[in-house]
Image (cartoon, rainbow, N blue to C red; front, side, top):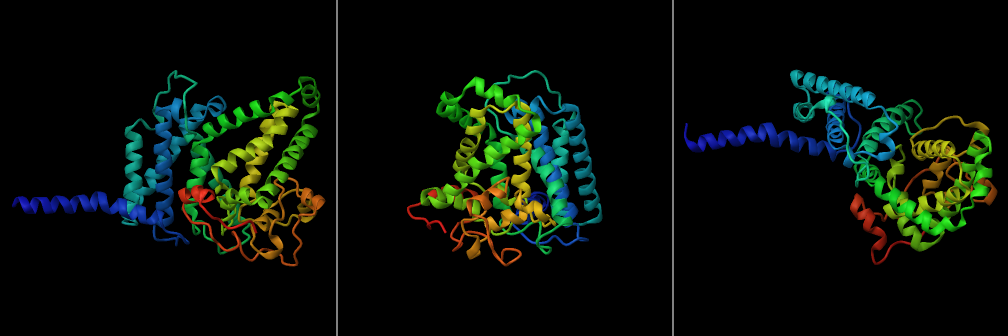
Length: 398
């Protein structure tokens, strides 16, 4: 065989074993629409997702001081995480290998299986974790993995069981952009918390009164939690309303409102500066009043759940409860671009605040007809949306 023939054969092998799987995987990640069952696409996507997250999990075990969140390290069980990682590797490996044997979506499953092999070669679920320094710069890779897995398992199931729009695909248009928002918001959690804590202590520390905080902390748990949520939502309401009514602030908030399809991932689309500013404004009164640690932990769970759930593609018979608390039906109207929905439904937890302040949506229609900013002027893509508020001219608030 001539040297030319050998090189040509080598190129063909490389194209078939490396380039083709990578290119097909990239193409898959740029698509949207429904995945048709029976072709190996659904199982292939599951294997690819679990393989990728498992590989990230192994890296987090190798470099916990840089890739894990300090607040979470002391709360979850490493043994349980090892078991979850092992199960994910077995599922991803089993599905991808089965599809390869059956010849279904070979390139996609080849990439998934390769990730499982690499993760296993790096130690898999048996990576030893010794002592490591605590106070190091970090990104919240563990928080990203756990929240993405948990949110997907919980909210995708809820959306499929109780959908508002029954024909809506899981991989709807612009899902890639919102997943990037989701990832970045989780990765910069350390930086965001650092900035928020710095601003809280330096801007509002002088307002703290220990005797008053002691009084608040001695309230029973449930009344204290309800008060905490009310105080936070009052701050959220007026901050949120300012984003809509002050043109300069709207430039940042328009990023969040540019979502044209509502689902559990839609709430992740947010400008990073708005994320930090809103947290400062909402947490400031809670910091000053000094709610107990247990109440703050419960509040974080409540706000974390509602932030995702209220954007979800979900419809349930809420009855009179819809006038008391914020539901997906209520918050969907806030994201609508229907005329009667503009600058309405600001509350994040207690719907009665909008009825109290006269900003609740009044419509004869059961559900909104369209979502997004009026005029649809927001560019797609994470970076372009982060740069949008700093452009020379932007559309005014609707």
